[in-house]
Image (cartoon, rainbow, N blue to C red):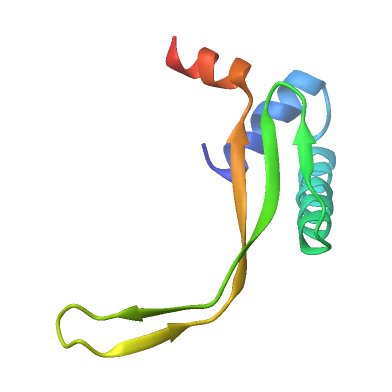
Length: 91
């Protein structure tokens, strides 16, 4: 499903205009992004949760040439699906 498909589907189900739905979707994504950026978690009931986890810096070795490389610390986001979502998808 593309962004355009999602906007069309939500606008039909919610009886909103496509423009209003697009603005609503954009604002929702913006709020989720800001929340994750500020270190918060996002939990959507019956869907899942998004959170940011810190990965520490580490040294890795290239198996082809034995050269060591430093990988810097970074924050990564993770998604954990709600059990209802997992069951619905797997049926």
